[in-house]
Structure formats: structure tokens, C-alpha cells
Image (tube, rainbow, N blue to C red):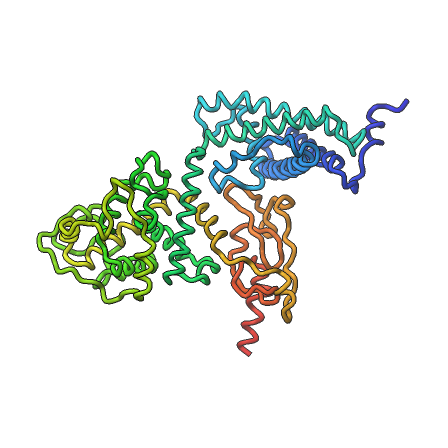
Length: 510
């Protein structure tokens, strides 16, 4: 009778076998071999080789998990644990190799290695980490045996173990991420969806009034990162007062990205309601300009965040409360929008709910005059509003960058023009089909510098060759007319230097 080791060797699947269990066998063998090399190496004597082996272990584990994910999708597609909780995570955590980071964190917790978690959280996470790693080892053993006996089938015991591992992995992933960052509650997710709707309505209104153009949106103009939140503040306070910026709610009932500004938004709303339609149109046009430019100021604008120079000039956040003892005649600015815009603005306003502050038409003359009397001129008042609204919008960029980026990303997907079919560029003269992109799951390091991708080092596809690079190796943007791409798109340094920029320049110089 043949020895057991020889029988196992004879049953080994071939490397060319496309079945998932066969691929899992060799991926698991690779992980085992790298772990054995690490255990037999003295890190103090050869630290460089130790780092190389750690990188190899990271890549081999990621490959093993990718195959295991495919096996679960093939074997237990309807029994997978729900991953709806991922919508609660910050956008920067949602990377392809998040699972590999979770297993690394579980190993560190079980080994007692320092991680940036509270001691109480670590004590609660260690039993989950232990159960997860034990389940993973059991799954590896069972799948390895199955690949040697019947690599084309999944018996019921194998399916049960996969279901258990999937559940333990999901529970640990949610618990571990929740201990590191603040995950969103279902109520906060709904409030952010309301903000997305408000931003979309704001963009549609700005397109209708001529503040923005569809070309700016389709080109993802960087200025829109500032313009859309600024205009959305006005829309949320005046045009859609019952929406997510409704000040009838308490700060706790508002989205967390706007709740810190509840009191300031009240003052902005009260002052917005005393503006004429022409003044409001001018203010909105000024908010669509560059970040540091304020056309509402009659002279050279002061430094960002400073008030209009006056003898008693207060800080921007207090401008709405400082009275002016010498009221000036109410005048409108010379640069007004077309009359049609003013009429459309008036028709878009909704009636105020009972109990709220009166709107523009219903504001008593005394109240309107009192608010205006706090400023030396209309330009002073508009400049105050410009500084305060811009300040709130810019604070969102600083304090809630991840949330705002996720909101704007969704807004652009909704309001941007639909991409033309790929057949049209290829049918045009001289245009070719776009190169096929390398799948994210098959590439764990930059194609140029070979740096491994992490939570901070993200993947970027070159539109010219389709390969995956880090941001440092793909910093360029260029049009690709031979692929039908007339607008600049991301390309890697190699394609930019070798195929795109030098030849046209030499041709023009000749």
C-alpha cells in the first residue's frame, strides 16, 4: 500500500486546473510556505529579508482570500451574511483588500500586539478574533482536503463551515471598524441621503438659472467642490425650508455635518429673507466664483475670513449681530442677473410652515429695516453673507471631508451626463477600442514602483494602458483622441512620457 504522503502527492491538482478548489490548493500552499520561511528566519540578523517575506505573506494571503471569496460566491451565494453595514463605514476604508487588513488585525489582537483600540474594546474583540482565526484554519484544512479528493464539488459540511466563517468574518469586521472610527447610524445615513437630494436639486436649479453649466459638471470642475455646498446652503434655507436644513429641527435631528452650525444657519436664514430677489441673485453668483474672490465687495477684498474694514469691524461669525447706528439707503448692486432669473427664483419659493419666521414678502417693514440697519451698505451686508456662507461650506470640506466627498461623488453620478456608448468613439475615424482594465483583485502592488496597496495607498487605473498604479506613478492627465477620449484623463508616467507628450511637442517644434 502506498504511503499517505505519496497518495496525497499523486492526488495533487494540476496548476492549469481552472477550478476554484484547485486554485485554492496552490494559494494555500504558497501561504504555508511563506509562513514557514518567516518562522525559520531571524529577523534581527536579516531584517531586510524579513520585510520582503512579510510583503510576500501579505500578497499571498490577499490572493488566498480573493479565491475564498469566489468559492463562497459559487458555493453559498444565497447564504452569505449581509454586508449592508459597509454603507456605515467611511469611504476611505472601502478598499478591495479590506478583508486582508481585518485578518491582520485579528492576528495582532490575538497575539497581544499593540493596536490603536481602547483596552475595553480590545478585550471584547479578542474572543471574536480567536473564533475567526480558528474558523479560517478549519476552512483551509477542509478545502485543502476537498481539493485533493473531489475538487469539483462542495459537500454539505464544507458549505456549513463556509457559512460559519462568513458570519464570523462579518461580525468581526463590523465590531473592529466600529471600535476605530465612528460608523454612521441608520438615521444619519438617511439624513445624508436627504442632503444628496438637496445637492441634486441645487445643481438643477443652478443649471436652470445659469450659475453652472453642464460642461462644468461633466468635466468635474474642482470649483464645484466649493460652489455646490455654498449654493446648497441657500437652497436648504430658502427654497426647500422643510428639507434637511430645516431649522425647525433641533441640532440633534439634523445631519451631523450641519448640526454644529445650527445657530449660525439661523442668522444666515434671517438675513437671507430680507434680501430682494436681485440681491439674492447677485449673492448666489458671487458664491459661484473662486474660493477667495468676493465680487460683493466694492474694493479689493480682505484676507479670507476677515470682515469688511470698519472702525468696529467684528469677526465674520459675529457680523450678523453687530448693529450699525447709521442706516444707509437701500440700494441694489449694479451687476444683476437677467430678469428671468429673478422671476424664476420667486416662483420656486415654497410657503413657510406655520410658526416659522416670515419670508421675504411677509417680513414686517420694521424687522427688515432693523436687520438692514446693522450694516453700512448693501455691499457690506452681501459681503457678510458671502463670508459666513463660504465659511460654513469650507468648514464642511475640513471637518467632514469624507462625508462631503461621498455626497458629492453620488451627486455627480446623478447629475452628470450619461456616458456615450463605447461603440461611437471606436466607429469614428482613427479611434480604437479602450484598453481592457486590469481587475483590482489581481493586482496588489503598483505596476511601476511595486509598492503594496494599503488603506492609504490607493489603486488608480491608467486609461492609456489599463494597468494599475499608485497615485505617485500616475499623476498626469492627458486626452486620448485615438481612444475617443477628448477630455484629459488619468495616465501613468510611462504612457505620458513615452506615448503622449514628447512626440506631439517634437512635431510642433519641427
